[in-house]
Image (tube, rainbow, N blue to C red):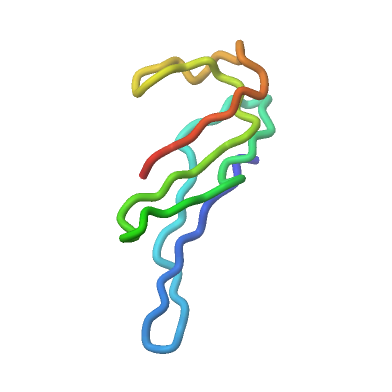
Length: 79
């Protein structure tokens, strides 16, 4: 129920699955949209993944993602 981002690389005239990115959490009662938008940096080193319906009011890297105090607030992840 969390969604995923599949990263492929094109090599030797063929597309190869390079990685699958999924969030490492999700509340049991949530229906989230991880991967609703994905952007890459110009050099392909960084990837930003959006989740439009994430409802936590956590801030920063140590925030409490388990709460649902900000319904539909959304979130972004940088990889």
